[in-house]
Image (cartoon, rainbow over all chains, first blue to last red):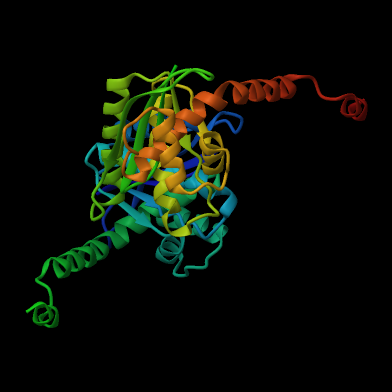
Amino acid sequence: MRVLGVDPGLTRCGIGVVDGVAGRRLTMAGVGVIRTPVEAEIPERLVLIERGLEEWLDEHRPEAVAVERVFSQHNVRTVMGTAQASAVAMLCAARRGLPVALHTPSEVKAAVTGSGRAEKAQVGAMVTRLLGLSAAPKPADAADALALAVCHIWRGPAQNRLQQAVAAQQATPAPQYRRKGTV
Amino acid sequence: MRVLGVDPGLTRCGIGVVDGVAGRRLTMAGVGVIRTPVEAEIPERLVLIERGLEEWLDEHRPEAVAVERVFSQHNVRTVMGTAQASAVAMLCAARRGLPVALHTPSEVKAAVTGSGRAEKAQVGAMVTRLLGLSAAPKPADAADALALAVCHIWRGPAQNRLQQAVAAQQATPAPQYRRKGTV
């Protein structure tokens, strides 16, 4: 399967495309960064990010998109821009009918390094090794986007099974004690 | 001028369209809410919001779009959804080349009630009076969107002058003491 990973950001939006399946060797299909000028207005920057994402999606035709999950608790100053860029990424993917998965930074780190607290350099080193690259992709946003795609290929099936189980559970009739209560 | 106000939200995205100029009587051209199902995935909800906004923009052809400015400090639980919906609103407007203005909730309240700390009901009452409506628009998100549009019509020119002044200031050569430093 081909996954396009997005490390969302207004100034630098990392993009990484990875081919492969869990348990097999993974290969990089593309990596880069969508940049928007810091001095531009937010709406204009979102349009530039949308345009860049559309080009990546047109060129690489991924089967799924993995976006870093943004937490409002962290980095209060930059979280709004990150949330806005991630909204555009989710929108572009869903508009094409592509499945979108969100992975937290610690899930991504744990997937590629074995530790959810790994540092940037460690993530870059493992991405380089796992994809058989000659050097770590730069900037870090590009490497992080590749790590997201790798994480999605490895975690995807298990996460999907979990989501399906939760959905099935929620679709079952109300439990016995509640039905008694309404008699 | 015609302004489309957006009170962004994933579950209820308020929309209000107002015609008029500062100092003249304002009229409402349209009001409503774009709703998305709580149980849907975020990417799908963003697509629904985009589709709804496109319909409003197609039908009402505003000359400007005013969106509530989201602060990361407030309502930590819902702020991400609000930021995502507001990103879609900014994107839809900017893609059409429409100017987008952000106003804070307290700016909007101050514009329509005279107090930045006014309660919801007071905003609704003033919107009803200012636009000559027979009753306050419901839900509150719809009334807030109208208040945003009113605020933009009243504040717009002053804010634009301020922004132009700031831009002109930033475009001027570096001040004397910096030029001396580089000799």
